[in-house]
Image (cartoon, rainbow, N blue to C red; front, side, top):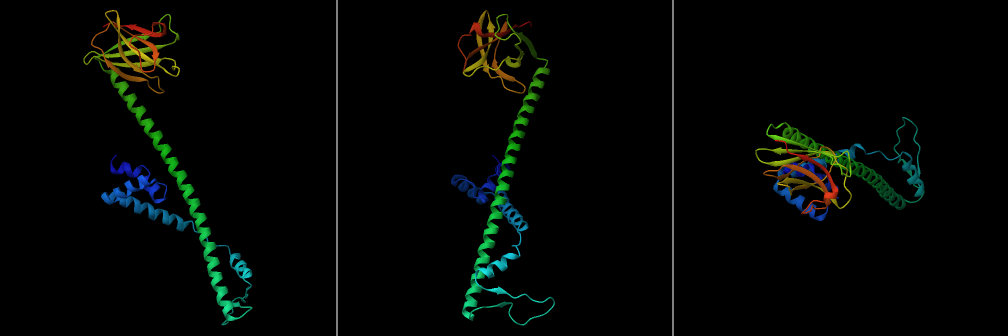
Amino acid sequence: MNTQEYISSGIVESYVLGLASSEEAIEFELMCSEHSEVRAARITFEMELENRLSLQRVAPPRELKSRIFSLIGMEEVKQEPQVLQSRPALIPRVGFPRFIAAASVILLLGSVMLNLYLLNQYKHSIAQYKELVESQAQLANANHSLNTKMQLFETALYQMKDPRMEIVKMPAVATSPSASSMATVYWDTSSRLVWLLVNQLPKPASGKQYQLWAIVDGKPVDAGIFDVDEGIPFVKLKTIPRAQAFAITLEKQGGSLKPNMDAMYVMGKVTG
């Protein structure tokens, strides 16, 4: 994995938010010390997170101040509009020492409540960011799957158009468990490599797997096992120097040394 792939994996966000495991954190700190790109990505994300929290900051409710004064036994002097007063805005009901203590309590309570408010906002932002990271991960996985399918499609199209390919169509045999079964062998006459296109085969039961056989001088030769997947089931199997026909049977998981003739689905003769 190169540096950009490492940064795009989400490790920067996980480390800064404290979600990374101890092993991931140690590896990330090592990467920061060795790669300036990783270190710059961490600093950039920290600044973005700080800016986001600053933008989401909300002033405490106006009635909070009056509630605090009421709790500590003090009252707030209501000032007349546009009239300057030289006296303190707060009139203590007790002596000056009590006033100083009350002011300290006000500051402490205000600080605690403000910190609790900001903490809740921070947790909310973290939750939103985690949802965003999960969504991005899902999109990345979907994009990777789509790219894989596109590459498989391009490979299949290229191989099918290759003039060196000998095409062997394999329809369902009379005793096939599925009469609609169909598959096609693309046999490279130069390299003798066999490619298989699964046109129609039922999905096998658990513990079972399809196996391609090359019929050479009347004897079956293993040409490879394969799975029936969604999308374009075009797979590269084994190299077969010569053959008179090809067939597909359903075998146990991992394949068999000899074909199960009672579970033969398709078969086709080589005409070239």
